[in-house]
Image 1 (cartoon, rainbow, N blue to C red):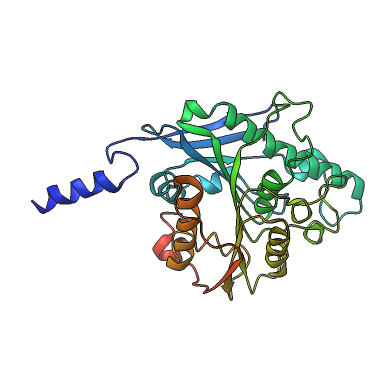
Image 2: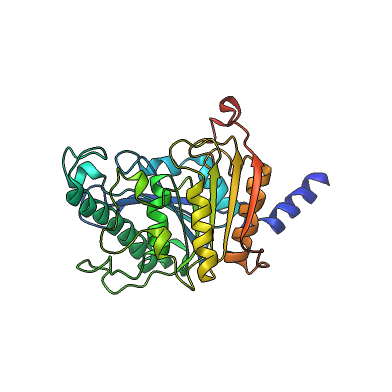
Length: 309
């Protein structure tokens, strides 16, 4: 009897049947370059599910989409939050300008390279928006997330839309339907790009947040030596000045990318993300904007979580 009761509860609480199958499609091309591919994870029973992009970091020079395709990520975003999970690759700096690095002096060239990287991410989102139904997704409900450089790129997609990044591509004229942004240790100004403003002519995310922009949730660490905690607070000030919803999770003693080792593991962090997702994807109550939450960082226990991550 207890087994039957438990099964009924699982069927009731799950966003889809416990017997439904998770599907995946890897190396789906959204452009012609070998790096312009994405991996997609969804459940076969999905219909008009929100689409969540996880954009990898790596200082715009390293990283790969496989980082967010783990069983752990699928359990969290596909099974718990009921989202189509998309993890795209994009051209790195050296793919665009061979040999270029952040600490070189080719400023104009690097500005153009950053623009090309951002264009790739716009193309990936536009592709998924166009083909959403194939994967059970809702093209009108897209959340963009990212860690470090991925946080910067996802913010660019969320908040730098006035410039026509898709001009000259097969997706030209597409208006992206972004309903929320989540950034982990996201560099939102030129100080993390070797002194180069990524969007030389079109502004940077912290300057281009405008009225009616999507709500943003940002996590930052007080011990982050790569992206200073002030970046998150400056972002929130900008949001407040134009009436855009925002919240900041400040991880005490948290290091760079502390969100990646907290979401789904740290109960307090996960609770705030739950509240955010419930609001933007399931018509839950709107949380109060402008809040800063200070949460003690818990170091990732590798032995306990390595199989899932």
